[in-house]
Amino acid sequence: LGCETDRDCDDNNPCTDPTCNITTGFCSFNDTSICAGEKLSFELQTDEYPEETSWDLTDVCTGRLVGSGSGYKQRNTLFKESMLIESLMSRYRITVRDAMEDGICCGYGDGFYRITVGDIEILRGGTFSASETKYFGALSCDIFPTQAPSTLAPATPAPTLAPVTPAPTTLSPVTPEPTTLAPVTPE
Image (cartoon, rainbow, N blue to C red; front, side, top):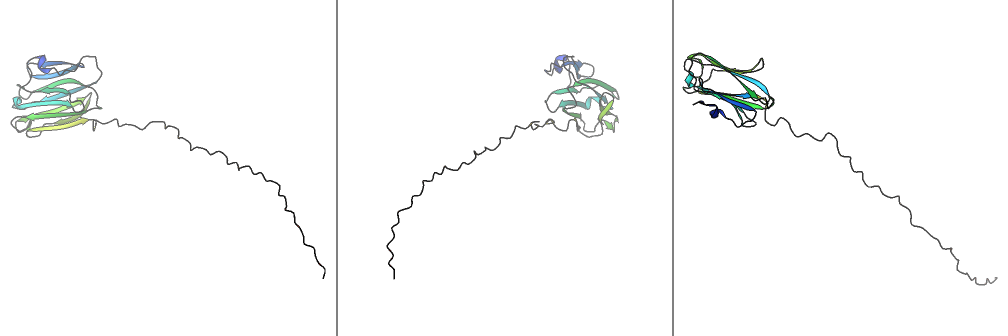
């Protein structure tokens, strides 16, 4: 479990410089200054059995492993690691595990974990059995829904009808038929 060399920590991300802390077996992914992002701090206070504890932090939207740790050896010790996240506009999942399924607090010490961005505590935990998973950041990976166009295409007007022009009427002069009157006979 854990890392032995920096190569064990390679996450194939050009924005990070993976480093193995050989003492703890902890991988950290530091900013290479190529990419912008937010500095996230992960703190882990181990309990009496630190070797039972492991964790991983994943960007759920990209599937990228942001950080992980296992193989701790120092009891009741606070470990602090910094890593770069692209932004809090993504969604992140932290899973902390205890191999003996008794958590890291409070039966065998006062262990805990905490995530902060800047001076703001995002979440903390420690009282669980086999594992604890928490999410933070965006509520979903689909935070930018497709937007309707800001301008509507002009409506096509209905065709206009040409004015109705009555058909020309040409009247031929009416020629009366000749009338012949019968002679009137006097009575």
